[in-house]
Image 1 (tube, rainbow, N blue to C red):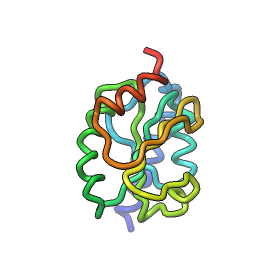
Image 2: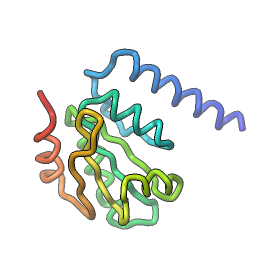
Image 3: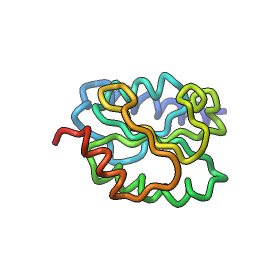
Image 4: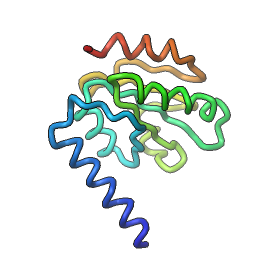
Length: 133
């Protein structure tokens, strides 16, 4: 239980850092989303957010994970991941019917959806349409 508390404390600290005016700084690592409020806070904090709805048992999800990590490190977009098995309600609220499903949020609103395996260039092109460098 103390390990869970430590993880929760770290998450709260990271969220506070994001909300403390780091909107301009895009995290270079993946953001793990566990609740609707986490997703809302992330999409409100960052101008452009790519959200990867995935499942551990999904082969294409495992194949796209390195691409998603590279995008997080290389772009101005924040990149978040939602495990649909532990966040079924959140996935349902966003109309996720298959994985991987990638939703792109701009200014807090979902603007694009990509379902299935995607190549890096396609995702970068999609993000570029909404980022202001």
